[in-house]
Each structure stands twice: as C-alpha cells, then as structure tokens.
Image (cartoon, rainbow, N blue to C red; front, top):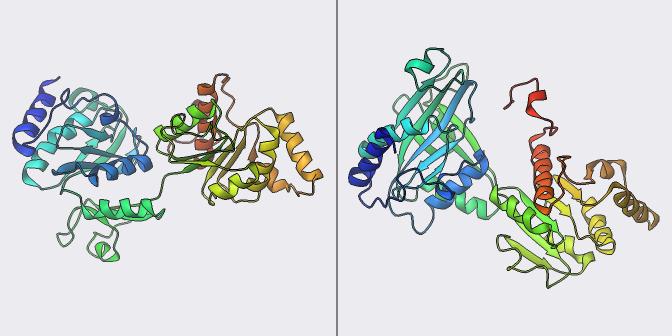
Length: 376
C-alpha cells in the first residue's frame, strides 16, 4: 500500500469513520471495488445506501464534466463507505488515489470539494497526476448522510419500474446547496447561467434492462449469470419444471414455468425488454416466437442456425401468422455477434455483446475502425 493510501486508510479509521472495518485496506479486489457502467453503477450505489447495514456517513465522488478525452463519462461515481468498501470508479484507476486523499477532508468537515484534473498539457506526465488522457475532468466530492433522501426515492422508483431525475449541483451562487439532489426546477434558479448548463449535471436514473430468457437449458445458465453481473434484471422461463429451478439459476430475479404457448404472456415483457429464445425445441420456439414478434421489444434474438430460423418463420406464415418485414428485421437470428464462440460461456458473451451494441445504437465493430470519438 502506498504512503498516500495508507494515510487515507488511517484517517478514515481514526477520524472520519470510527467504526471503520478494514479489509485489505482500501484496495478490496472483487465486488467492493468494481467498475460499473454509469447506469448499473448508480443502481449498486443506491442499493448500498439504502440497505439495512447502512449506518454511517459515506463520501460520494461524481464525475460531473469532461472536456476532451476521459476513461469515464459524466455520471460515473465512486462511493467510499465507512467500512472500507469502495464501489464504482471515476477513472481507470488513476484519479482514485487523489480522490481518496481529498475525501479525508470532505469526511472530516462535511464541506464538498470540486476537484479539477487537467491532463491536456504534456507536462502533466511530469508534474501532474500523470494520466496522459489529454482531457479536463471535474469531480464533485461530497459527504452523504445515512440513507440520503434521494437514494430512498430512487430505490423506491426502481422497485416500481419508474425513472428518477437527479441533479448534481457542483457550482452555486450560495443559495443552492452543492451536492446530489432529486431534480427540482427551483434548483436551477440559482445556477450560474452560461452557454452550457454550467454548475449542474442532470441525470435520469432508469430501471436496469430486463432480459427474458426463454429456455432453461445448460447454455442459458451462463447467459443469466453474465446478464446479472452487468446489472440487468433476468427472468428465465421454460415449460420444463425440472430445468427452471433456483438451483440452476440462483441469480435470476424471476423463474416462470408454463406451457410454451403461455410463456410469453406470463413473462409479459414490456416495450423496453430484451428477449432471447433458446429452448432448443422447435415445438417450443415456434409459439414463443409467435407471441414475442408482436411485442415492441428493444431486442429479440433466436438461438440456432439461420436455416432453422427461416423454417420457423416460414411455418408461422404457413399457419396464418403474418411475418411482416419489420418483424423480420427486428429479429436477431442467429443471435449474437460473430466472435467465434462455441462453448456456452462464449455464446453467452456474444449474445450479451450484441444486445449491448443494440441498446447503445452501435454496430459491434472493433473500436479501432470507429472514426468518431468512442463515447459519442
């Protein structure tokens, strides 16, 4: 552990958080120091802030502005809890040490800090923080009370499937409290008016994507696991009771067993839902796909060769079901990106990668072939 980090650990243990339970210092490897995407990152942070074990103040760092290049985008967060756990990140690991140092003062005084990191100068590699990213970022560091009101509201809205709007005030004329708030139009009245909405970062926190997996075979298990690991909500549905069990899918949010013709109706995926059909049984896939094609899903994929998908669609049409060009265009069959995957884990990776590309409006090509900035 470096000297700066050791000082931070000692301070947090002795002054800011007297009940500081240290586990391998602040460099906790696995779940306590994960880097999430902005959406699932805030979900995980809210879960911690509203959990029964949240009994001490914490410090939250929020990336509020970015000019030029940066590893993370506005909305990225790092939560420093009183028991030594860190959640999230605001950089690739290069800013966190300095932010932890600043968090000491914030935790002690309760006064927020706005940290500016300018890496546009070549001298930054010598006398700066040494990022070499050629960008300017600002990070708001604030002390949070136990169970902040905005976190409770977001948790409740997420449970009900509703969005929440946050306003992170990072510069004010003194009449508005700097920090994270639920959005209110009154907040904006005292924000300095410039050519950009300076002084405030607005963010809509939406529920995580919902993936419905139709089929509970062995290859559905890594898909369910991987989807949960990146923060999605997962439903697994199958007509076979012996397959759709909690032992086989311990991380799934919902397990549904019903007749093939009733599965889609029981799952009832909404317009923003994602669905993958992978029962491996033609007689099951056909009625499930027939029902899903009529729904305005954000993503619909079918596992199996192209010839099999064409046969299912042909037989659906022969039975009187009108497969429109729009339906066919929305169906990803075969499902997944072409990454040469063969094992269940590799296939799951290709499926999740394609879904993420669709959600982000990207083509799934290598970044080196992208001519525009990565985050545009």
